Image (cartoon, rainbow over all chains, first blue to last red; front, side, top):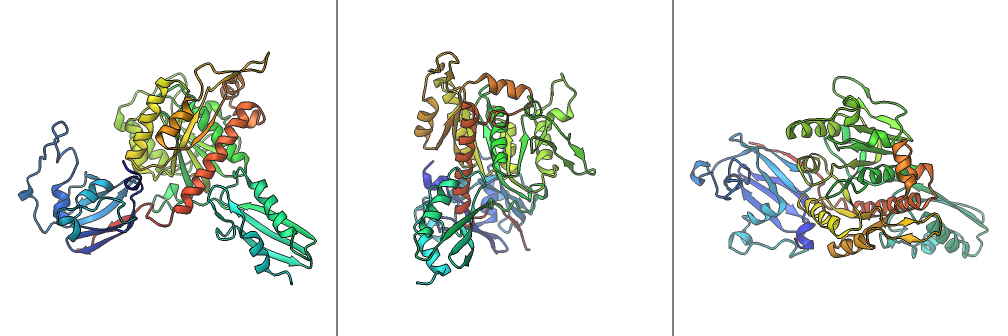
Length: 118
Length: 362
């Protein structure tokens, strides 16, 4: 882990619209994710095979208009999301969230490396 | 030139906190300046009562102000306000400013002894300190601190921690018959740890020292998830083989984003009572080398001393029993280094969210 990635923390967290979560990181990068996208990439043992790493969830099973009930911090390294479909077991580490970022810049296929604009 | 608050602050501004590398004036340490003719009095408010250089700072302040024309006397009143995080909605931990993990990659390195003496050393400097013995299978803290008041249930929900030697502490040992082992499945153990975090009424604490169970397993993960641990101290003995475990413990904290405050080495050497020579029984300098390789501070080394074990067995931490012994001194130095590292972290705080809970609006 690089020094920058190690110190990557959340400066601000907010609901951008009914289906979109936003986080501003301590390096200044502003991430956004559609909740359905996060649900499809849930890292929990029920959604990813523990041994092979193969996803067990089919993208089409997650409705595009999925919402949430609550987003909470886990220790000081991750977030957990209680989705409106009741699923809440995923622990999204900050580096994972950064990798899944859907902001205009990251969506173009060049995910902003953590700490770049620090 | 008349003596004013501004001229005094100007004289003090070049003095830097040696850990934070910033002016004590800019850090807001200088408060309540009173000018009474040629007599100057002010408060110097440090970030921890365990500041290892507080007397040096006081001296520097006195010397700086003394030189101003018209000054006849300078009195610096040392105070401390421990800075810490807001623990948010976790009620029981709401008034705990710093959660300090004491961990090791494997057992038998003197981790509990270090946790207890670290806590006692911080308390000795005037801080309010608690100890949470999270070693559910092998609780030892109540043996090492004499229990003056046992824990008391307040209501169905909360329990008041035990007290002894000015420390507040809680341990599985209080809830288990003596000579019996805790034979529990993982989820139950995590349940106990969660109760210790959520149901113990610690009151206002500057530091809560958490004695981790050895290794990198379920409880350690639960602790890092359920409590915003401020920082971790990793203990080791000097041999190369235990250093492998240090690396593991440091990696665990990195994964859960707990800042590693540093590595401390126990059983570093034995001082012969006949010739006074230091005998490095298990090699020397291993902990320091490992800290350098991992890029974390080296907090200090504690000699092998029969007094440490004796004090531990009789519930009297060596820091209290023999503060001037080599081991007592070593633990106090480590406590000073830990307090300094925490102060550095706490100044950085405020730039990020320690914890969050976002209610979704639909």
